[in-house]
Image (cartoon, rainbow, N blue to C red; front, side):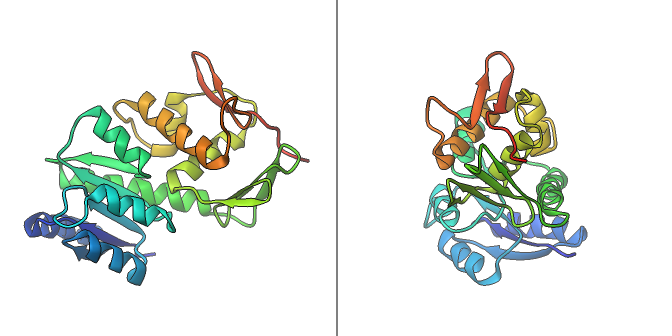
Length: 232
C-alpha cells in the first residue's frame, strides 16, 4: 500500500531533497511552503503522515500542529533547527510523533517516517478488538484506534494511542520508560525519559486521569502501569 507524505517547509531546495528520497522509497509526496497551504492540503488530500517544519513564514509550525490536532490524528514528524531538549519536549506536547533536528540525514528522515507508519499499521492490524477495563470505565478499540472513558470518546494522537495500547497489553505490569519508548517509538531515542513522561502527561490529561491518577499509575524508580484490570 502506497503512503502519501505531506512535506511542509518554506525552503524549496529542502522540500525537493526530501521529496527525492521519499519517492525513491515509493512514497507519494505532496508539498506545501506555508502553514495555511499545509492545512488546506491536510483537509483535501488526507495524507498518511506530515513532515512539518516549525519555522514557517506565515503560521508557526507549532500553531499548525495545534490546529491539526484539533480534529486529526495524522502522524506528525516535526522538522526544526532547534536542538534543545526543551524544544523537543514542546514539540511532543503539541502532538508530534517524532522530532528531527536540522541539519539531518535524508536517509534517517525516511527511516523515521517508515518507522512511524509501520507502528501505525501494526497497531491497527487484525480483526475487531474492543477491550474494556475497570468495569467499562476505559474502552479501547484496537481496529478503529478509538478510545472512550466513561462512555465519552477521547481523541488521541497516534503515539498516545500506541502508548496506551502498550500499557493495556498487560494491565498491572510495571513498564520501564525504556520499554515503553521502544514500543512506541521503535528506536533508541535520546532523552527518552523526558519523552515518555511528556506523552504520559498528555495521555492522562486527555483521559481525565488527573492526580491522584487512577488509570495510568506511576511506578517509582521504574516507569508506569495501567491501574485497571481488563474486564472479562
